[in-house]
Length: 90
Image (cartoon, rainbow, N blue to C red; front, side, top):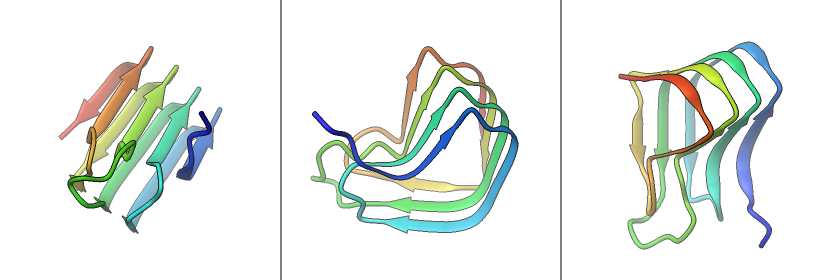
């Protein structure tokens, strides 16, 4: 099954993403894979409650990922962690 993401960050280090709004994607909103040291702040991630496969964040094989001062309202999981370590969600 092909997973569609609105944004995908792969092997990024010291990443900062802020002041972003993502609405009604057909799949995961933000995918983070193999990243070290990423900060996401002041985001609004939104999809209808009955939407399938709409994780807000799909984080895998990453560390030191921080999500702060954000609103995540999705049909599935707000955060999906797969082999992810050292995340900070505030």
